[in-house]
Length: 349
Ligand code: 13P
Ligand code: SF4
Image (cartoon, rainbow, N blue to C red; front, top):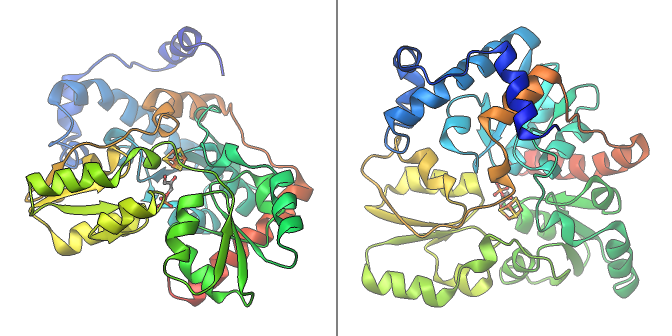
């Protein structure tokens, strides 16, 4: 990826990206989905990028798969499909496009490539990592296998292809408990998220042993903070992601994947909700749910926030930042991911 100044000079030679009020006005259907959280002035800045990306997608037969943590202008403006990790992985097996642009972090793009090796998969910023994915290598999986001989390894999709290849099956936050329960063994190794594993263990009779990784976004929340928040406003509904600590999950009214959280809010329409997860989640659903007040604080994922309209446009224009996975690793990783997808479909998840 070139320096930002070079990136901008390349884009400015091919596209008119100056703020454009007339263009923004002509794209009110898209703006209506983010009016509550994006100012008209910002929309005039985003609109030329959104138009250029959507035109390029059509001419290159490309799709953008947008994770629920993308900012509203990406989530509503240019994503063809949005969802949690499991939904995006399933979508990668179904889309007929030649090019997938991953609106998300690197492990998600690798998962798309593993499942669709014939497609070009682009990640707008190669530095869009994940603290969980970087917390373990295949050697860590080998250490766990040596410590717990015979126990199957369930690895969260927030891992590198190499780690998936060394595992028996993957899971996401929306199917972790069901995957662990479906395995025949009494002892199950879960990597790399210690808190997801402990939250699963609290709902399972199995002996769940785990790797000590954590998400730098979700580990910041504390049960004390949430209790103080609820004391100040007893009506607030606290909705947490299972990457939070078990103490935080115990304070929550509901715990689920990012899409599970969105569905819960849609179904229950609380007067006030605190989403104990990444900041963009509340912004993305604010306009669909005008009656719901979203309480802060939230925490930002610095990796997800590396993805911007500007770098999406750049990689679509240049086809830079293609994600590749060595064929032997991809073949073994595909088994772990496909086992998870097959089991999830079987269980109707
Ligand atoms: P979901 O699978 O719930 O979307 O979570 C992905 C993630 O990275 C959460 O931090
Ligand atoms: Fe990884 Fe946490 Fe960011 Fe999700 S929010 S991508 S788990 S660092």
